[in-house]
Image (cartoon, rainbow, N blue to C red; front, side):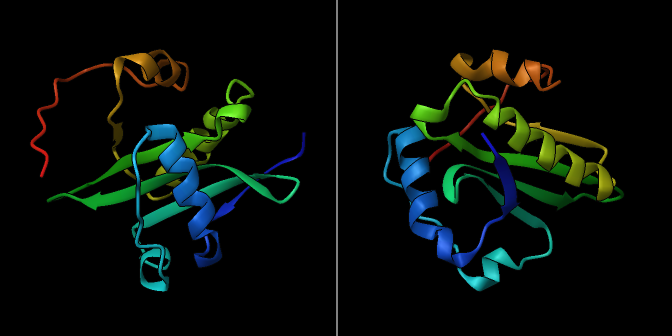
Length: 134
């Protein structure tokens, strides 16, 4: 299995939306246009096996008053490729970008089901998050 991780391109939009829909069981649309892809503080990546996109993840760099925070979102792998280490490789790739961008911490949101996966990637459960959805 030869896994390649690369930046997302606008040509990947349909495959990325499909992966996210399957992973999160919801229809999803993304602004995968050139402006989104080329935004300086957004790092959207995909993982490929034999030129087929099998996973995706995104890192947002948020500028706070005197330091930067990384936020990882939309980590998803096709169901038939889960358990092969692809998600962990996506996370590690984004963590390396975050280190290079000198963030002081990286945060993400997860459900209980995926909490142990993120612990394997070095994350710790620290805070309670409250959400209001629209």
